[in-house]
Image (tube, rainbow, N blue to C red; front, side, top):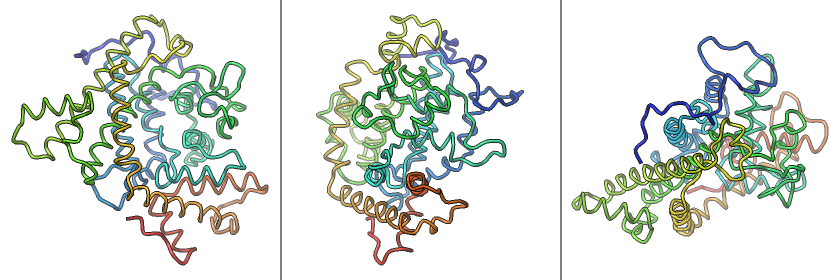
Length: 398
């Protein structure tokens, strides 16, 4: 679906001029909106720079061309800006939320998250989305006047709720948090500044979430083929990707596999973006929102794939699960990575002074959370080197 690049601002876009503000009031910038300032603060944060050396799926030293958390984040940001621009929504807010969505990931991707969650099971667990919120509200120490980045309410809301509501209207955790309750960072934030966990987030936050799915689908196929886990012709049974592959083969019958793969991935991203645009326009037309709050209080997300797009997304993830995410070598490396994180957690629990913190927490629960913060902030490389420093043998993640 072709959409004009000059799409006028939608009535349901988040408006920085009507922002609910920052927890600590600051003078307005003469040259940047509040959402643009949020975006810039995230880019200049320490946590954002660390994404360069954090695993996406393949550990960073396995090859220079595999995605890291940083390159994944930039790809999500590019898709989010394209969607926001085409829908007449606020590009700066969409970009800020795309750039911040993975700040809380520990080293070694989801393997590191599983290990930290296990170590923290008696202290509220560990959740990378909640950790992202903790980073931008407490752990970044770049400003003299406050901890965190003092982001706007709308950006914090999107960091917390880009995947949907966290609680029902009575405050009870729902969805993935229903069994164990809200992670500590979410619960603390609710006490400090209410982000209305029972509603959806803005359309810009929903854009960041669907952009994450599009980027994952495309670049994980690309990285897995580059790693030799399967080849481009294996995509033939998939509905959308298979159709694109057949079209590309007809157009370029003599193209080598690497170029075929590149062309298929490029067209797959475009097709998923077009599907999300078409379905989101349909949903917005049915809802007829007059402002951003109408989106928040809708019964369903406004930004979404069509049924066909959802099916294509599910097929790609189901295809990748046994061939990439649970492939024998990947699983072995991730198991070893979990061992590194668990060992480090046990070490710092026994020897907290080795964290060389300016000040150690005085009670056990706070100290355990401080250890989790410290490990979560590590890059893959830093975690491996720390393990070598404290243990006689360190797994070789290859």
